[in-house]
Each structure stands twice: as C-alpha cells, then as structure tokens.
Amino acid sequence: MRILVMNPNTTASMTAAIRATATAAAAPGTEIIATEPLWGPESIEGHFEGYLSAAAVLDRLATLDMSFDALVMAGFGEPGREGAQELLDVPVLDITESAAQMAMMLGHAYGIVTTLDRAVPQIQDRLLTAGLLQRCAAVRGTGLGVLELERDVERTVEVIIEAAREAVRAGAEVICLGCGGMAGLQEKVAAALGVPVVDGVAAAVKFAEAVVGLGLTTSTGRSFAPPRPKVIGSWPLSTHLRPSAERAQSSPRNTEFSAQTSGI
Image 1 (spheres, rainbow, N blue to C red):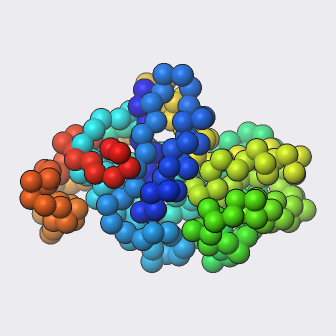
Image 2: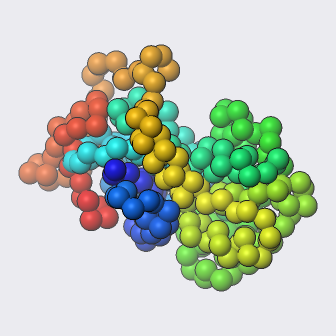
C-alpha cells in the first residue's frame, strides 16, 4: 500500500517532519511518500493563504507522476479536501477530521491546540461542516506562527502543553494537535498532560490504511463525482511554471503526473 501525504505549504522541512511522523505510524508494508505544492504560501495562517494553498495542492495533484492508494492532506482546518475527492479515484483523508474522529473514540469531549488564535474560527468552521464540533470542548491557540514551531522545539512543546491544559480545564478529555507542523510532538505533550494526545497525521494514515484495506474509496454517486469536462484557462498552472521539457499533461483522475519536490 502506498499513501501520499500532502503538506499544503511549500516549506520542505515541514514536509520532512510530516513524512517522519506518517512513516512512524504506518504499518509494515505501507509506503509513505510526502510532498508539497510547487507554488503557494510558505505557511498557512488564514483564509486567503488557505484558499491559495487549496488551489496549489489541487494543481500539484493534477500533475503528479505516480500512483498511490490513498491521499492524506496534512493541513489542519484548511480547504481543498473536497476538491481532491473529486479529482482522485482513491480515498482522501484530512488530518482535521481524522484527529477529531479518533479523539471521539477515546473520550467524551476533545480539545484542539493550534497555532495562532486567528486559526481558531477557521478550525471551528471546518469541524462544524464535518459535523464534529458538538463534542469539541475547546480550540486554543498557542500564539505561535506555523514557521515558529520548528525554531525551538522544547519551547514549542511547553507552549502547546500550556494551551492544552486550558482545553482540559474546559472539559477536553483528549487533545488533538491542530497543525501538521506539530507532527511528532504528541508523546511529549501526552506525558505532561496525562490524557491521550492525537496527532492528525498519524491518525489519518491509520484511517487510510483501514479504508484501503477494506477495499473502500470515496463515493462518486453525487457530491464527489469527477469534475465535469470543461475548459479551465491556464490549468494546471504548474505546467506553465516549468521548462517545456518537464511539462506533463494534466488528467482528471490519478494518472499521468510529473513530480519535482521533496524527492518525488
């Protein structure tokens, strides 16, 4: 089984950290590949950057030259998942819903610790749309920007623990790490809190393995039917950004791709 994990920003070091967490969670025989868009914001901290990233991720998926059995989208609370479900013929999971779903299996109420406070409403909206907000006791920001998470890991863990304690006091029995850039920190946070801590990347990988193992994929009967054939000007954009020798033909489903970043 091969699972593609997509970092929605263009920071390759974050892709590497996400890849490491996904690989650690994967079962023997599961191959993890990870990449990021060819263009777009270096981090995502708001709706504007989120929608830019969604377009960049879909562009990347439409021009990626490899097959895979499932896609994990590693952006927390960010748009684009539904578009990928229409585009691809494999299961698509995102870390927001995967983390919340797993947390609800472990406790009555869960909390989320994320980056900046401005991300809180965006995450709440995503949970509401997914039907998962009712059992969320709290979403708390740490005040750290996405790119700050990697600068001082020990300080990052301290700040996450402080925010997570606020969520626990608000009624959370399980904590979700609310950013792909927090991947790999769950054990340190759990040791300090004494409650389960769910990493969304790891959770999504395990759900992806289960869905693929059961022979299931996204329903195309209605909401996520393939995009209707039509002219889309300058799409995919990345084919216009590469030298002509490297350009690939776009495809509406998971075929005929060309890869450049993060070793794939």
